[in-house]
Image (cartoon, rainbow, N blue to C red; front, side, top):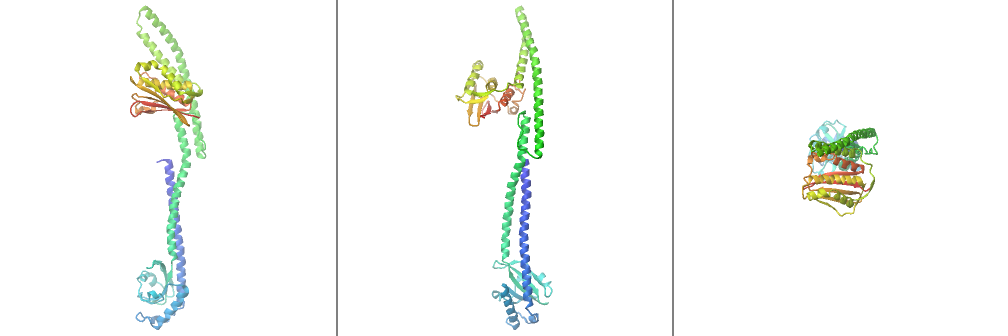
Length: 461
């Protein structure tokens, strides 16, 4: 899992949990505040009504005689109070939960309400002249109500039903708070992505910078806009780049000096061996051993020259080089080898140009074409293609040879890496170095059918 992904998941999860918890707490708090308010109000109304009721006539209330004088007295009193307080219903019930008197005309025929028994513990534990309220409940008509209870004496209680319709609005807030929570989650994810991008971007820059150093590109500039603690790391990496570049230059200078010191005596050895060979030929002696010496000397001189070209390339002098003209020149240089293998060296008729050092580009194309000529068989083909757009110019050299093993593609441009017995392993390394000197890139890939393709890409800036 990447650093950026971990930041997004961690930040989003924590923020989402926090937002959901806050939203839930907000909803519960609003609901509790409303219930506390409506409960206190219902309890107060219950007490006010109970003060106008005389408990002395309660014993005369009989369920079988709903039209008794006591019933009429209590009903009239309850009606006056319920009307003034806008109560849906006020009633008196006994210990058997039989409703003896009530103000709701639609429920006159109903003498029992099973929902009263759900509050049995609160009702029976209530002391005389004390009031309490029930939990809110939803009636058959879909409306929310709250019961208030007041104990009149040991056997009778006053009950009122208060309208709690605003509880439905509070319940609808639940959806609102859930919406806020989900919006917070979405915002957390977006914020987490932006935060991860902000934190990971300089890290990615430093990773690319270190990768470039690992590839030997010591001219790579330190990434800009890196602040905070990461700037300390960036400065340390930049110092490392300077130290590595200096060490690399010193090593190449030393090796180039050694190679130069070796090449000078090799010239003398080659000259003396050539004179010995001439004497042996004149005297009719055998020249086999001296010829082997000359071959080895020639091979060493070629290796040293290749290394010197790699370690100390000439400073580029870029110009607009006509690709077609250079391709024709390469064709003339290798004409004998082309004729020997009956190879077709084809280049497109484009009049495109590339901003490059002419001698460097010539050496690169000569190395690539020479490698292709060695790898392809008789009657093969080599194609030089070029293309150009507003951003960059591309040169591709394609052959129909056996290609390069996939496990060797990543090392093909490394110095001294070769698949040939007599190869120096510096030809493609020189190509890569000369491309870097001209701010160009070179890459290789195998074709789908056969052969491989080397591509040079140069920005037009």
